[in-house]
Amino acid sequence: MKAHDSEQIDRMVNVLNDRVSPRVSCTDCGNCCKSLMVLISDAEADHLSNHLQQSRESFDAQYLEKGSNGLMIMNRMPCPFLSDHKCTVYEHRFEGCKEFPALHLPEFKRRLFTTFMHYERCPIIFNVVEQLKDEMAFERG
Image 1: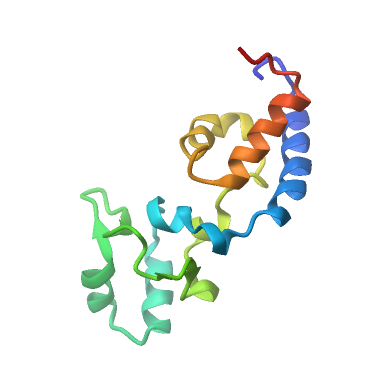
Image 2: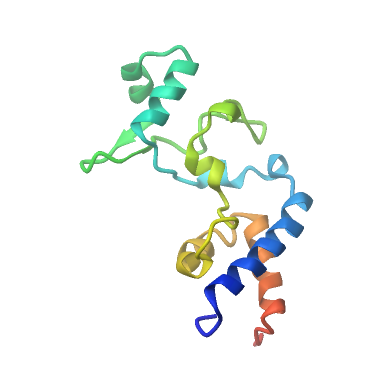
């Protein structure tokens, strides 16, 4: 993959993502919400705590874990806002949740490590990567 043009790879991934995503029902899966840790900004925590009509202090204590570097993540898995494979705060979800599986973003080649971390977690990623192997005539052993 290193030998291929980054923009060409991005175009192939985008086409495959557009083909695969409609065939996968995220609400039948929910694996990302069961095991994915996304970074949460202060603005996102403010927004969701306001939506839940909860003080920020109470929201933080109930849902967030804060690192010594100031970064925040959910304090437990699966996500407490997941119910029956669906996000109960979907319209107010965090950017990392909105972005996942991030196949639409540029510079796919720079995110290979992350993509392969989620390969078994996300059927969209799995199918896009498998089809990308075929498109690139990847030799299978």
